[in-house]
Length: 234
Image (cartoon, rainbow, N blue to C red; front, side, top):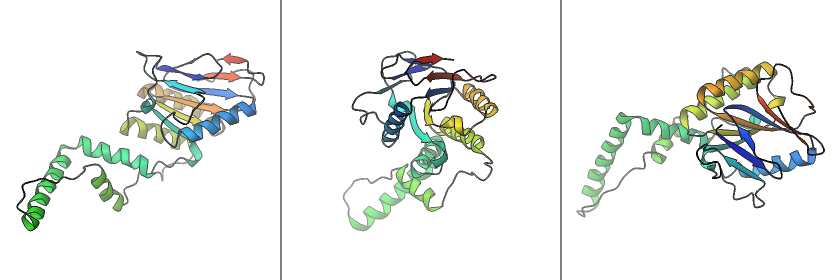
C-alpha cells in the first residue's frame, strides 16, 4: 500500500500501485467532488479545501501526514495539455539537473557574463549568475521544444504517455483524474493498471456511472458508492 485517500464522511480508502476508480453514483456528491478537484488542481495544494473534504496520503511510512507535493491534480484527461508551460518546466529542470555538460556550459556563460559586464561598468568585485532553470527554460521555449504527441491514436495512448511523463520527469506518486472510465475500455484500463504497477505509480479517478457489480475481467481496484451513500469495495 502506498497510502490512502480520505473523502468525508467515508472511512479511508487504501491505495495500491495501479488504477483505482472511485465511483460516486449520487450525482450531487460527485459534482461536489469534481468542483473541489478542479479548484485544487490550480494550486497543487489543499488550502482551497477549507472544509477538509479530501485528504491524500502517499507515504506508507507515515499514513497520517499528507504529502501534497507527491500528487498531480490533473482532472479531465481530454483537456490535459502535456506541452503546457508548467509541464515543460519539469522537462527543462530534468535536462539541466541531469546534464553535467549543460551545467558546465551554464557556468562558463556565467563566468563570461561576469567578465564582460563588470569589465565594462565597474571595478567592483562582485558576481552575477544565471538561474539554470528559468533562463535555460526561456531558451528552450523560444526554440519551441515540444513533446511529440503525433503518435497518439486514442486516449489510451495519451494517458500512457502522461504516466511516462510523470514517471520520467517528476517525483509524483499519485495522479488524480476524473472520468477515465468513460474514455478507456476494459482492456485499456487493465493495460494502464499493469503499466502503473511496473513504474510504481498510482492513478485515482473520480467517476459517476451506474454500476452495482464489478465488471468481469476488470483487474483494477473499484470503490463504488451508491445513491444512498453505501460503500462497496471491489
